Image (tube, protein in one colour):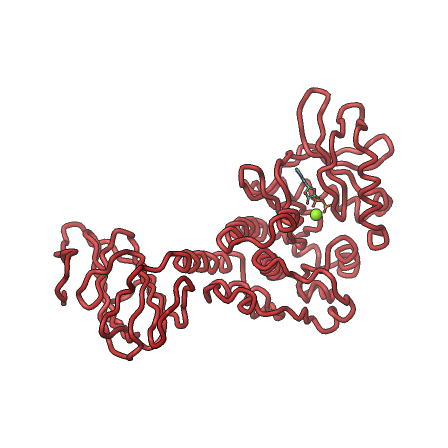
Length: 426
Ligand SMILES: Nc1ncnc2c1ncn2[C@@H]1O[C@H](COP(=O)(O)OP(=O)(O)O)[C@@H](O)[C@H]1O
Ligand SMILES: [Mg+2]
């Protein structure tokens, strides 16, 4: 079984096949990668067509479940029809009866080798990859398909910077996996890698394995992308017993990360599935939030932060609207003077004029500081064609506002404040 076949000997054997031709038509030009199930080659058909060829590892050929799963990968993957998922063209067996699959050829590298070469990724780069993964998981989960083997080796970045999710080799229909728990556990254990398995999958509690198991692995992948420090080696028996990976909190490794990013990862990695993001859509929406927060945090600080004699609390003057009010947002771009609060304001549409106590602010989004004196300030946003909104905010703790203006009904107008040294507009 795979557990006793070393990675090096698999690679050596896989290399030995380079130059061979399968069924008199597919020449194996180059070894591209080697996973738990098979070796993947760049193949050239005798008619000149290029494709990737995945050949089942020799030690799995006699294993009926492995063969069945191998063939199933192509069918499950083709059913997804997602731009970030490969197309499989054919399945066959070579002269010696070893199954192989023919699929779309990708140029680029898997994320594991990118991490090894470049170290951790910048938050926005990591979030872009994970957003694509979540989009694939949304499509798969909607069809009742669980991936069950999300990890850096199974996510690919092409030369054109497209993200592709590989290896639905462990994927199963949710319902179908329920009747055959012990067998599924065994094969998942043998073929999958425990490093990225959620606690319920590690324990072999396959009744509990569901969509949220993939979301746990997605959180683990994101943690690994951001920190390059996911524990790959550990005492498996101890881990399965306690479920504790002794992970340093993400915030301790990335002290500048905005809370929305920390929440995204922390919630995905909860041991209890009920405490995690409940579906891929919810996690993707939280990820969008984290992207916004990271963009705000990455903006250079204004040279002379606006110091206004007082500001802001949670009482709302305007009606409705998407108001996000969070504490302790502290984008780390410039030293924040002691006794100040950090203020991050962003209003959609981006052309909206932002006013604080009637004075126009220099930009949208706006980022600056105010004295932490507990005083109230009026924040107002205006844009022609949109209903203005105002908020009273109290200068007690850091805050971030992300506000959306609603379009005015046709014929309705309002007078916009002149963007000059402004008077209060009340
Ligand atoms: N279509 C492809 N084009 C190029 N490289 C690929 C392709 N599919 C897989 N690879 C490479 O081969 C490695 C193993 O592929 P994978 O499908 O994950 O195999 P396994 O099921 O054995 O884990 C991947 O990490 C990737 O680097
Ligand atoms: Mg793989």
